[in-house]
Length: 349
Image (tube, rainbow, N blue to C red; front, side, top):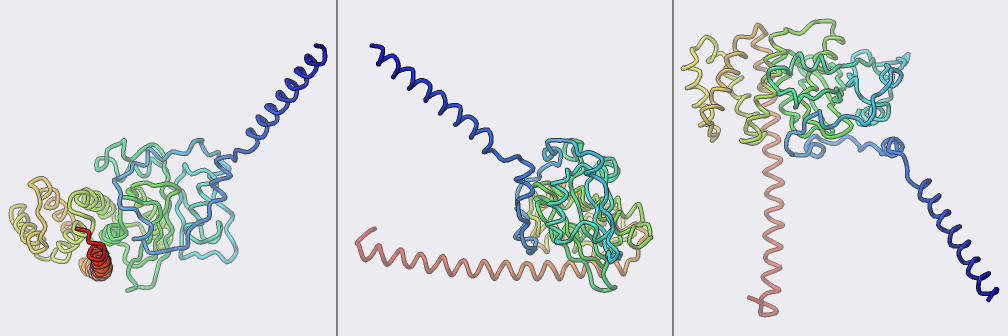
């Protein structure tokens, strides 16, 4: 009997030690969230279409980091001696250290290689307030941008990362209205956001590089244009909404000075030419926007050139999509032929 009791006690001791060992291993095997974020490799820069998901608008309010960044994390990096002074990075003030590093990876540059600016949520609200509901703006500034001024006539190019509502073409159109004619731009966030707040950083970056303040009315109307186009895109499609507003901007000389009723007829005509159907509310929204654009005190030739450049971009995008669509149609037809052949081979109906 004593031997049986001793054996039973030995088994219990061994089992307790195994459970303790397993518990200790489980506690040390889980990596920290920050380590996982820093280990993530940024993708190689690719065209916007492959990086921006076509999803519903995601408010920046839902993308808040789990912890408040401290003052050291949000401080600008030391500027390198050979820094590019014709470029700027503008980061959201509420990015954590790991999130900021991730954004720089998207930009493909080292921290300190260009001067860095910061945008606060209050600055974003100054442009978006009244246009975007407070819950959509959120309480944290996360969107970040890279902007490099280019030579006159180069136009605007935009790539986006984790921006799921505003498209590159929408940014190009709005920046043209604001008075930014030539620049290379990257817009990024550590997680998916709508992208509406990024305009604030772009305005700030361009003004800091050039030393010239953009027209306040133009910046406000450009922000309204971005939001209006995005709302129309939710119903009409991004390509159709952008094309409609841009086409109207190419005929501002026809719109300028006209009464609201006359502008309404022009909008109806252009929408009909583009095979776009507008509701009464959408029609009024577009009419009020193009009237505001026509009243801006900005260079009309520059605005027209910006609109023409965007039209060229939209035409190229349309041709590329048609080409891809044609390819997949051929693949689909070939696959259906294979299926029909197997059905005939095995007598399947």
